[in-house]
Length: 435
Image (tube, rainbow, N blue to C red):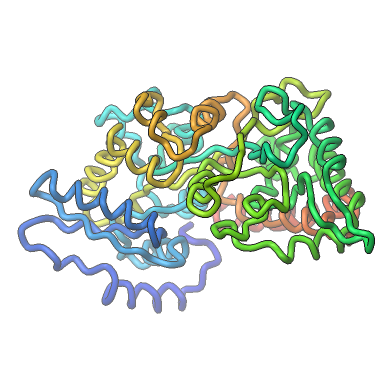
C-alpha cells in the first residue's frame, strides 16, 4: 500500500504544485533532463552542484537539473504517490525502508550489478544497510561513522592520547566525574561528558550495550540492554542533577558555530560524526583533540570497536520518468575519484571498499583512518531494515528525554514505550505492510 495513512488531500494539493512548479523538464531540448532533488543547502549543496556540473560536462546526452528542496522526504513521497516524482532524490539512510515499505522506490539491484556496483565495491556495512531480500533500494552518497572526540587539553596528561584514553564505559565515566566542575550553588560549570550532548543517536544506546531494537523483525524497546543503557543515562542526571544538566545545556551554541560546547571548552569529550572535524577546522582550528572508538561496557569486550553509521543516499523514486538516465548520474557519483572528492569536501569518510592514499592524506579530519576503520567494524550499527524506524526511534528518543530529565525511571519509561510501540506496530503492519 502506497503511503498508508497519508492524506489524499495533501497528496493532490502538493503534487499539483510539484507538477506545475518544481518538476519542470523543459530546460534542454537537446538532452534528456533529469530532475534531482537534494536536501543540502550552503557549502554541502555547492559541492554536490559541482558534481552535477562535472557530470553534465562529461557527456552530451543527459542534463541533470539540481534543486535544493526543503522537507525532501515528505515532498518526494507525496510526489511519488501523485505520479510525478523527481528522477533522483537525495534522502537519509534512515528513511530508505520507509520509502520502500510505501512502494515508493525503484529497485536498483539489476542496474547496479550491470555497472559493477556490487557489495564488494563498497564497505559491506554501508551496502547492507541499503539492501534487503535481494533488493537494493539506494546507493551511497556521503556516509559517516561516529566516534568519541576528546579535547586533549581538557583531560589529565595520563589519558591525553588515543592509546591511554579509557577503553571501557566505566573508566570513561570515572574520568568524566573526576574532571567535571560544579559551582558552589550546585550549577554545572564544566562537564567531562554528557550522553545528551549532542543527543542525536538516542535509538542506539541499547544497541551499544549489546541490544537489538528490532529483534526478530519486531520492535524490541523494553530489553535488558535498553534498560541498562538508560540506567547509565540516568546516572549522569543523578550525578549533576537533571535541572542542572538542562540549564547547563541551554547555554550551548549551535553545533556548527564557535559556541559549540566542545569547541568552546564546556565539555571534554563527546560522541560525534566524521564531519565534526570540518567545524573544528572552521571555528576553532587551534584546539587540541583526538578521536577514539566509543568505550564499551567492561563486561562486554566483544563490543569493542562499535560505531553508529549513517549515510546520505541517492534513490530513484518509483515512476520516475527517466530512471535509466537517472541511474547514469548515480553511477557517476559512485566513481572513486568523484566519491572521494565529494566525501572529503563534506568531511565524511568514503563508502567504498577501496580508498586512495591521497584521500587519507588530504582529508580535513586528521582521524579519518579511524572513522574508515569503524565503518568496516563487525560491531558497527545502522538503522534496522524497516520503515517503522521513525516511530521506533521516536519512542526511544522520548524515553531518553524522560529519563534524562528525571521525570520517569528507565524501567517505567521503556515499559510504557513498548506498550505504545506495540499498538503502532500493529497498525503499521495492517495499513502499510498489508499484513
